[in-house]
Length: 157
Image (tube, rainbow, N blue to C red; front, side, top):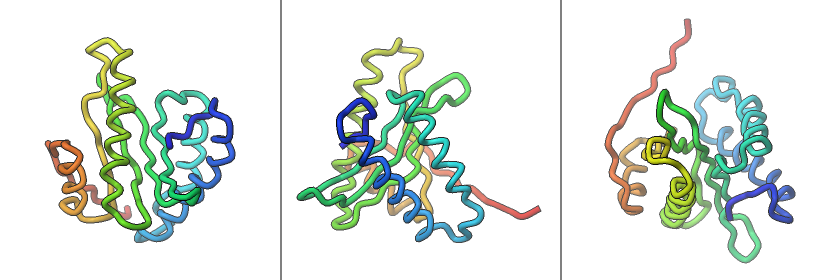
């Protein structure tokens, strides 16, 4: 389900979503102090309050139990908008990630239907602490073509 502030009950689910994001960072960030998780979470909450249409915050549920999450948002990138996917994780099985990506595609498609052509979201950018090829297969299974792979290096100065 996509968390929407205006939908009854979704405000209560936001704390569950936020805790999953925090847990994800603690499991996968090599040096947790390098990921300003509280600042990111505060920014995400502010975005959810101020620009809810630009938030692709999702929880996957099975038998009323949360089994996964996906955190994405629309962000300006110079003169174009991109869908930035910060986290995506399914507890088990991971193949359920493909349906979550397809739901994300539907959300972006609905947004694009209301935007002029020059403002439409045409790219998804996904950062991951995992090897890129492992997650590229999920994008391919969701009929998305990977057009670029980048590396991000962090150095102390």
